[in-house]
Image 1 (cartoon, rainbow, N blue to C red):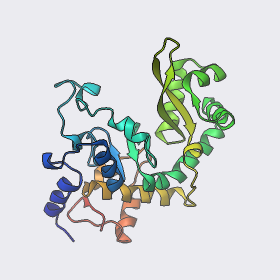
Image 2: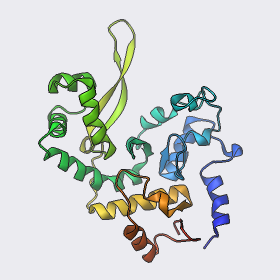
Image 3: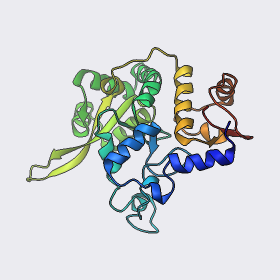
Image 4: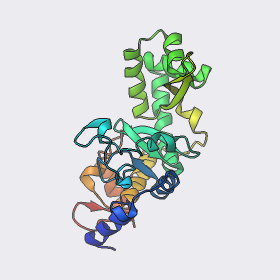
Length: 258
């Protein structure tokens, strides 16, 4: 087993955390996502970050929020999400997590369970997922009109569902009627964007997602892993993965994938 020090060096390389490994093109960014399996946008955890790997100066130095994003490469997150085999999901505790196919497979049982729960809830969540089931993926204005919801009410409902991947949104451009276009979101149910159900229970799915995350990070502290996803990861699950030798502990509190 590699030592913590060796794994830290491997993490610097694999997660492109040194300037000599910076991403130069969108194709390189896609290859980075395929290699790691998942990417956050900004660096907020041990999970690899798309923007950190660009090593580009921020759009507005000293600013928070969008101003801290890379000066010219800030659109890459949205552009990657348009590529085949990629989804931008808000399962990183409500923040965007770019996912490639192995991660989507792991999320599938969790998302379908959340979708079934929403369908049976008998509230606005049910109205939204049932509308999308009959109408198909729909733009925000159409959904607001069909359900009679004001923007704040719809935002509250969709955020709850997007956090657990029951609903997936993507940015689309629509004609503004003046020769230009404006940006809005298109909402779809999980089962409308991923058609390869994985016959696993939620515990198995969450365990697989944890393994994908730890592999992506190379090295992560066990206290952090439990906070990566919208679904809480408790110590018994991590302990079971360690006992099954699917996770290793290279040092006290640290986790890696064999």
